[in-house]
Image (cartoon, rainbow, N blue to C red; front, side):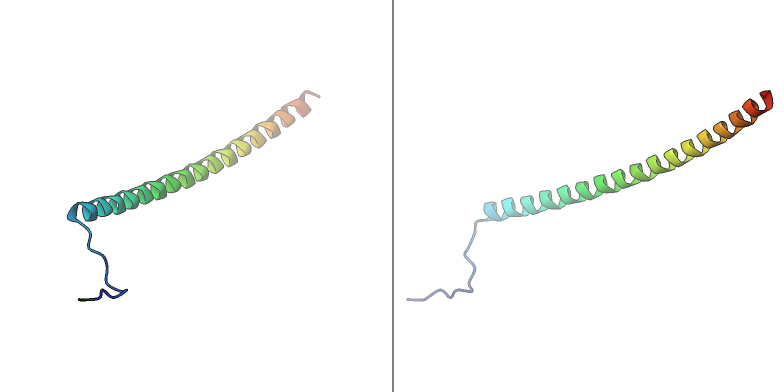
Length: 74
């Protein structure tokens, strides 16, 4: 009578192994999609920050021009 050691892995069917492999593939794909979404969000945040900076600069230029005009009117 052969005794199975604790380090021997139990046998699993090919269908179960295929299911495990598919789950691993799906997990990896989900991780890749999550990373792509995070990168997209990071790029959108950079773009929003750049637009806000440009908008503030344009507003300051407009306010300065209006101040000059209003001062010239007396």
